Amino acid sequence: MHLKTSGDPVLILFFLIKAVMNIFHEIRKSDIILASALILGCIISLAYFSVSSRELSPASTVVITKDGKILENCSIHDDKTVDTGSNTIVIKGGEVYMEHADCKNQICVREGKISHAGQSIVCMPNRVVVEIKGGDEAYDAITR
Amino acid sequence: MMPSQDEFKNPGRSSGRVAVCALLTTLAMLLSYIDSLIPILPQIPGIKLGLANIVILTALYMLKGRYALLINILRIVLTGLLFSGAVYMLYSLFGALFSFLVMYILKKSGLFSVVGVSLAGGAAHNAGQLFAAILLVSNVNLIRYLPVLVISGVITGILTGMICLILLKRLKPACL
Ligand SMILES: [Zn+2]
Image (cartoon, rainbow over all chains, first blue to last red):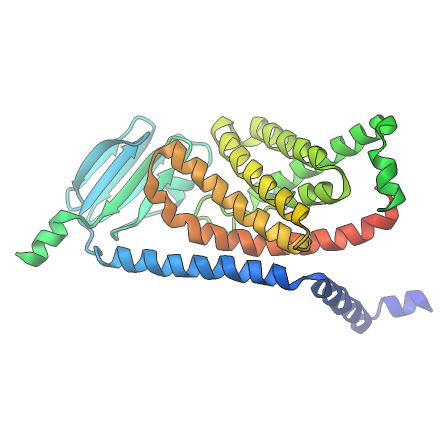
């Protein structure tokens, strides 16, 4: 009898829903307040970051750093290849990408091409950061 | 207080404790490995499901805090040596310790359920990792990733917290 009913998909669904309801019963008001406070804070700062990066949106310079030291600071329109020893970065046609990296996880290579100000590619194991900035050149072009 | 928990905390039964700690460490290592195989958002490094946190959280609730901490550190060091390498080990250790500190304090406060403790731990883990990365790479601009990382930590933390809630209910009568 018991075996028969436990195989019934409707009953299984019923017990599943009951189990989930039991979990929700245990969640306290303070948990919900904490979660919504964290998410709200994040959404506000996300909005702030997107507004502040839009202000300098025309991409102009590419900055490549290793261990915080600037290795390359050039225009995004200079077509060139930069080799940091561990990573090979290609700047071509207004786009930047990590062509090669000797790191284990290859996250930086998989990140693909970036072309907008504020975007960056990071190779964590090699501590290499590639950033696109919308700095002074873009500003000059507007005011001129 | 359950008699089974008191029995477990009795110093006379240290061999049983070693066995449980070893078991939980292995389980946490396995879950960390599975975690590394599942990319959620490959564009943003550091976003993980945090499955190993289920084990750490269960240990925090079922055992004394110092055992949970021991399991946590052993898990990071061993998976670091086996799979991910020294640099990653360093910054996941940073995230794990920060997350543990936050979870320990929130649990002690008694204000939150397991889900609340877990989601704060998830957010703290990702934030801690990011701060370690900022120090390592010496680039403050990485802070831009913080909101996305904290949101993903909260969401995965809620999921692992719910799993942990079910686990704790089932484990209590089973006398861990
Ligand atoms: Zn890399």
